[in-house]
Every structure is written in C-alpha cells, then in structure tokens.
Image (cartoon, helix red, strand yellow):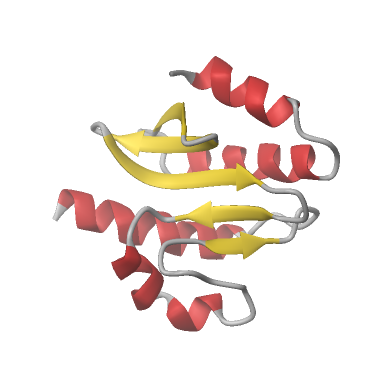
Length: 116
C-alpha cells in the first residue's frame, strides 16, 4: 500500500473533507518527514519503521484522527478537550484541519513511544 493509494483515497472524498485531509496530510509529513504513507483499514495511515503513527479517516459527517496509541490519547487528554473521543481516536470537523500545534504534540508523543 502506498502514497498513491492514500492520494486516491483522499481525492475521492467530497469537499470540504478532501481539502481538510490534504492539509492534514501535508502537515503530518512536514512535522515528521520520515513517515511512510500507506492505506489500511479504509484509512490514510502514516508509519515509521513499519509501525503506525497516525491514521486519518473520512466518515459521513466528520473525519477521525487516530494516534495509534491509547497512551497518547490519555497523555494528551487536556489537549483533546472539546473533541468527541474514543479510546483510540477522536473526531475532527470535516472543514477544519487540526492545528499544527496539536498535530505536532500527537506525532511527537507517538514517535517517542516508538523510539523510546
């Protein structure tokens, strides 16, 4: 699974989901350029050394972001106030990308788990 499949998945989304997902993918890859893109579980996935770091998925009324770690969700619970959360992911408005500040915290926390 590859970058081309992720692009095809994102491009197949209606607006504003498409633009939001494109912006978030760009930010994710700028924050951590070593990430590899793949498509799994009907989601755009980002991996480091074969391990999942982040997932981005389109739903009917929203997007979801999954940091691939319940521990990251717990550690950043204060930053996720105001989002609809589950144990392993949270909902993102389909017309509003996550801030670079929050994406950076999420990605750096997960990378620290994987590299630590």
